[in-house]
Image 1 (tube, rainbow, N blue to C red):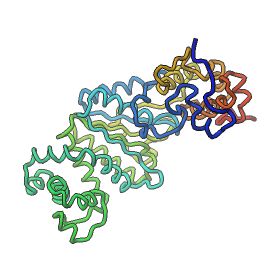
Image 2: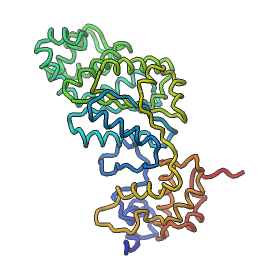
Image 3: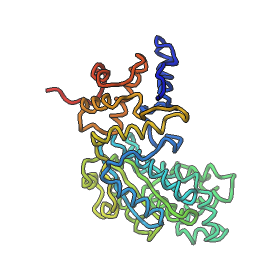
Image 4: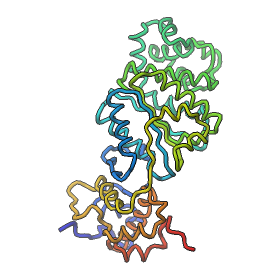
Length: 381
């Protein structure tokens, strides 16, 4: 027999239930909370649960080629809530498991509120900064120990002097960091790090971006750049960034991979955002995040819930607290166009909290009785 379903909190104390209701189902954390997948701290909660996805083989081929240290690009698209960022998180987990610390993975999300190249660049610097020590150490071994050696090697005087100082002098670390981020610095502070010009113009930042990516491979066996929601950028910025991505891809024969995600129903919509055909073609692998097929929803939820279940908590069916007919009723009530992970999990969370309050399992009658609380249902004409 499975777990004897009993509440462990007072059913009249709603605040306590809201905090602990998922523990009644043996979950370590709320499995239905919609959070940024990149903010999920543990890989334990990330497991493949989309065997129904037509692009699965393309995704697996991308991972294989990265592990084999080949150059590869991939475009990943779908509607909001379809699981694009979750798939990036899954790919990150796979690459870490297969390559360990020798792989450099840089994830950057385009901010919707500030969709500029400057914002993209700042996020890039923040993401690569924890990895700069081994990169700069490798440049030192390759180029030589002096500032003049670095300048000759990198062919960019201001960048080479700034990062040489960052590597060799702890006294000016804050100034070097500020320069790299594109902050405005007075002339006196620029002189302290042997730099002539502030890093203000986009074309300067493009150059720094490419140089740092290229030299990351001195310290890491592969570099994977993940750029989430490239469609947020306005067309002029998209065109320039797309050119930078293409040039960066073309500067490698191996060991570099690029994934770009965007909100779209069809792949060609990437061109409508302002990116050119050259980049579109170089992102040769392609995955569309499709709706979950209705017959696959139970398997999707079983796998997903099992990752959140506490060790030693035994259930006959990982659908618990749902019964099969309850989940079937939910998918019947929902608009098929919204059979994406985010929307299904949101409704599962609504029903699970209601069930915890009433000390019930979630069958078809329960779902039907609470359909007015659900979201993204079939339209009524």
